[in-house]
Image (cartoon, rainbow over all chains, first blue to last red; front, side, top):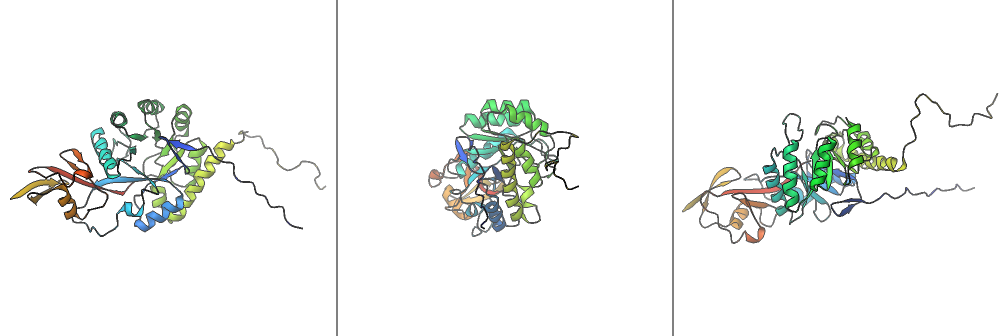
Length: 271
Length: 68
């Protein structure tokens, strides 16, 4: 007697479209804090991410030009390179940085805006963020924007024309997880553009929780790069984002506090 | 004649005439992904060969690095 083989594929997801482009993976990853470029490359490969963030910095004068650069390891033909404005504390600096990035990436205009307001907490400076977003949208950029989890300011960013709203789940690099799912839900419910949790994820279950809330994607760096085994954690994050997304699409069962309900038949028990 | 400029915030003296292409070559980044700004204005790659650096120019040369 042969076994009956089940071949039920997971139902297809709806396309993840942002700024006019469609992506297969809902996990976005950073490229900082890795041991070396080989580990960066392997972790990103294992994560399945298509959108990969980079920072823009001055060349180190006198650095060895024969050393490979990050973009030798991450082919812009293969990955969507998302330049960020990490380390910028004013709209002026952020806009300047992204104009340089656009030149560096041959006119590629999908960018991650972040304007920080506190060196201790890396919380965003929202007035400067709003100002920079306006200038960048007017200048033809497609702006994905790191922001606080304030639904009103998230709506303002959407009204300005940002292509994705990216509220923090907790402090950048802290791994504290999803601290205010209630606010994230409000932002998700109100937004007409993709909502991506950016910052704060610590482990795979955090990524799954973000996706179960209905986020369109999750962006992370430290949770992978600072894991004991970054490549394995990258794979776990890809699976968690996928699992969380499927759970959201499936719709969870209703919570029934204090109401136990057996799944096995209550009749036919052996006396 | 030497031309004093600021390169990535550091003082630097260049021979004259020097084009941006010469500076990029000197840094070892010819053909690599960089972006150049002179006095706050982006200089497109197509103009590296024709843009001369002048006294007291503030030049920034940037690359992409790991970041989140």
